[in-house]
Image (tube, rainbow, N blue to C red; front, side, top):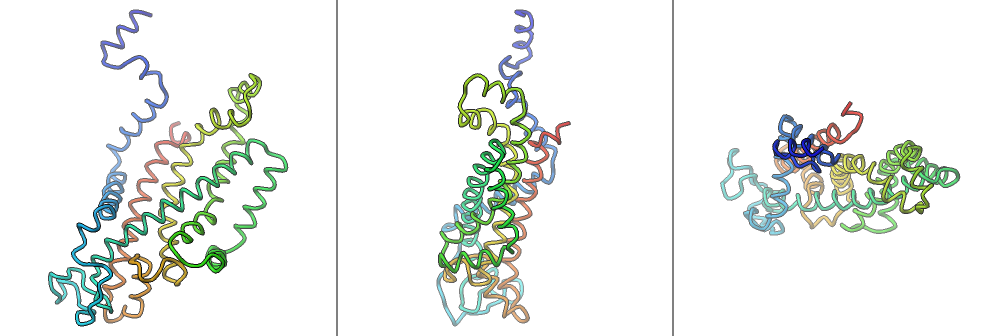
Length: 306
């Protein structure tokens, strides 16, 4: 044993690192990321959006709220416009580039906030439903079935009508309507995990159910929750844009990609840039998040490791 330990030290790998599953998992993640062109593209796209959201006050050339009617509907710089407004202006004379940059803050904020709410609710209900089973499982799944029976727009409209518009309410609505995906996936995995020997041994050793769930069950489904959350961020960004486009989301005075699409729809024929650039921003952001989500799924999904 001493010779084996010396041999491992000579190879530059600590013995504790070699046997830890989490170290092997992260090594696999780094290795797969280096050779995955899609993951690199997704990381660059998401990185650019995050950079724009964090440093929006420094990057935006103009105040996104400033309205100057004398410069309304100016085309982009390469289409007869000026370099003062590279992507042109909208019908109220607001700089399109500045509003696209500031819109990234709302999209990312809503996406992350709603996924946090939905992931928390769905993971907790999925753990409880899958671990306890019986009537608890039936109740949670029937609630999920009822919610899935309602079209998203109809359900979101009803909830927004009760709560009112606003950024916080949009996050709450998207969080409440998005928990089912997490709940169903987590429940399915917990149903299989609870039959494992180590879970039964934990219960036989006198561990409480809460401790068994938090220490033995949840760590084994955490990777799936991370993958779902990554893919759900993209869906939530599109959902927020849809609600704002319909006038049910964020205050129209706040620059968001959805509100810019709504403002530009009546100018598509003669001034398409008003809606084109926020639409491209949504498309590229969702593409980047989906590419990263695919890489996470291929890396952390146990079925992909066989």
